[in-house]
Image 1 (tube, rainbow over the protein chains, first blue to last red):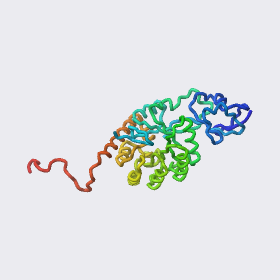
Image 2 (cartoon, chains in turn brown, purple):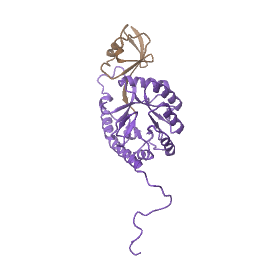
Image 3 (cartoon, rainbow over the protein chains, first blue to last red):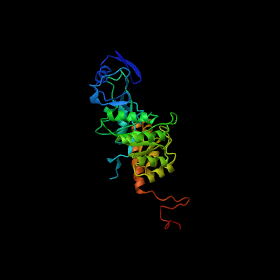
Amino acid sequence: MIELTINGVRKQIRKSATMADLIIELDLAGKKLAIERNGDIVPRIAYPPTTLQADDKLEIVVAVGGG
Amino acid sequence: MDELIIAGKKYQSRLLVGTGKYRDFEQTRLAVEASGAEIVTVAIRRTNLGQEAGQPNLLDSLPPAKYTYLPNTAGCYTADDAVRTLRLARELLDGHDLVKLEVLGDPKSLYPNVIETIKAAEILIREGFKVMVYTSDDPIVARQFEAMGCVAVMPLASLIGSGMGILNPWNLQIIINELRVPVIVDAGVGTASDAAIAMELGCAGVLMNTAIAGAQQPVMMAGAMQKAVQAGREAFLAGRMAKKIYTASPSSPVDGVIGS
């Protein structure tokens, strides 16, 4: 297992998991979202080939009501 | 046809609305519909991990075929956070590049930090974003944003969510007179007459959220705001009569009054 930070929370995930795996694990599949990894946007097409690394900092966001 | 043009795109409605603070997505949808708005702001926030499955999504209530989303940077206090938020928004909305930039300076007043806002605008414009910028009602700053290439300048009428109305119509007037890009009053409108006054001054549009969502009956207020913006716009185009200070002028004929 490796540990990383997702939306400010420390999480454990299996070693060599991809971004696509993580989305399924977090029950976010099919949701309209965007991901930043260590300060850079990860485009949707890059989810399957992106392997997560220990201490990655991820921000996973959605659109919500706002003014 | 009197259309609002922002970054080359035409809009029939000059009322832009936020989608925050509603009871639920259904009320949001009904209020947005009643407002007649075509541009709706949305915020970008961290998803709730593990609690999202099956939850309704705001974007499903407001179909992209019908509305132009305007992702905002509400809650950002640095240029860096604002830029990161809008890069995420562009990815989230499939390359959509029209954005509302706001960088706040103080959590109590929510007053904009124009220095950080300028820094963020520079980066965003360089990256191809079309920036509608929330700012103070300082005419020099407004001119600066236009010169940088912002597609709309959006000065506050009063503090965000305060409903205090238009506190400095004189500054707004200077900004409207000097800029060529649309000037849209953003923040501070409390009721229909505030929106009408903004439009009578010559604003290109009005952006509001709490004035509608915070009304006792939001959907009814949304309709009132649509009418106020239209009425104010038409009054502006019609050109108001000159004010005659302390000089009355009868509307009815002076001659032929009985008993004279």
